[in-house]
Image (cartoon, rainbow, N blue to C red; front, side, top):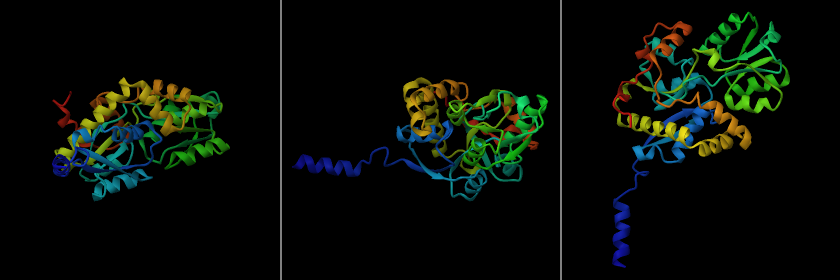
Length: 301
């Protein structure tokens, strides 16, 4: 009896690591792209709690609302694309920074029932919100190939894909997982993500005042663990893609293979890529004003 009492007291006075983890509020638009499902999987697998933090997810449907939440302090961190409103907010004086890169390449693919770019000449193509890197680089990619088309902006990918399936659009930009599904419906890949560089990579952004906060380092270390897991545990990664993306085992395997070049291994992005994207955006920022990787130095484990 004495032993059981002492054991109970010990459990109460010695909280486990998960209970002592600092909550970090993160806004995400969904878990149906690899960048965001990887964050959720990492939390479920305990990657963050071993570094003293716990991600608490909040669904936020629009990039503008994500940036607003980070600015107001209602969110601690947000996964954003380089081509979102973040660069413009920083240029306007908001003290925000991207601190981590989840994907080296954009998760965007131009697909259509037509089998060539020439066939979409003068037709309607579903793109992202007006003014984003995606819209501008897609427009440039089409121009370089001699194609003129009407770019139709969509804030969300769901309505864009629905319009593609009903024929209201002749082509559309979709994520890798949607492209994997659409292949079985007879859609053709017209322009791949790699061909549309520089484009919006997905990363994690925080308020600049928090750059040296212990929870930021814990979040980064947990996310680095997640990237290593993704690239070294194909079976686990394919299972994750199948569950969150609602894909068959064969589709998940195909998506995982293609994603290997897209999902970052280091969490950082070369300065040349950042400068190229900023030129496309037309934002007068230096790379260090958008991305801050300084605290990553010496943190390679």
